[in-house]
Image (cartoon, rainbow, N blue to C red; front, top):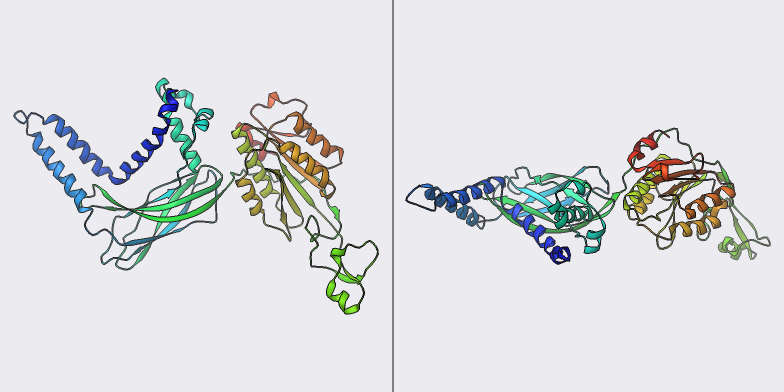
Length: 441
């Protein structure tokens, strides 16, 4: 009850703390602390002259604040983000700063502002900060450290303050910003803050520039052993690579021929039909090629296992990328989704983008079973990544094996000793050993 009462104040406290820390420099904080100490010591003016030092420091602080209102810098800023970032990997990007004023600007600083996403009370109750058990009883009871950790993770990125090089009159300069994505998904940027110091370097004038942009953060990935081989081989694909799993037929064809009974009306080439006054159809070339499927199950209540499962899937997608065939990423959200990469289709980055925004889905296993039952005839082999080993997940593996589809199975778990009845060639990945196990496949 107490936590629920004070929880709304946590948002206000973090916002106030952020504003206060930006306005004052380290030197300014030292001066303010010194002024407070001198004020306490110099209460009795008959015993000490410390009050004179307090008066001097107070005047210095006041003059410093007033000077910020005199001729603020005329600056414009433009952010230059990369197309992608990766969770857990620091990266750099630039912000272009243009001096539109009439004098040289020095000692400017930049702060880039992502959209702050605070946790709701339900998330605050359900999730725990890593290492929270090591904090003292009071901190665990209040839970403020947990709130700060959840807010940082939900926001998704930590950005260091950037220093702007000296900018001469009507010139531009690039300030390099260093950022660390904390999670996968979309990170929203809202504004950029410019800090310009007073002549004493005690305080900063603050200017905010609205700049709404998004950054796609791809899942964390691990190195996978080069010894890992895709299951299965080449598979017959009627109509060739341009026709498989497409809606309608591709306009690329091998030749034209007369219509035969049983030909689909979608294959009719209407210009030739009108010219020759009899039905003419397009003929496609049949091919044999490798078509793999990476099937990802997201049916788990453990958020840490879910994240590692998605990271394993992303790692395997990059390792198995090939120009000689196709790779289908199959997963379930509100409905089953199939993202195909390979020649004539999207790049593997589109699959990584899909993984970046994926969330858990309780009915994922059943949906995947239905989809694979309908499309398994098109698949040469299957990589199956599971966040556990439930009865439904075991049934999914058995259905693929009974259909004669070669399966490379990966199971994520907290304790591999708890798993029973796993296939002999299953790859068990405990959370603490995921990187090592993938590197030694």
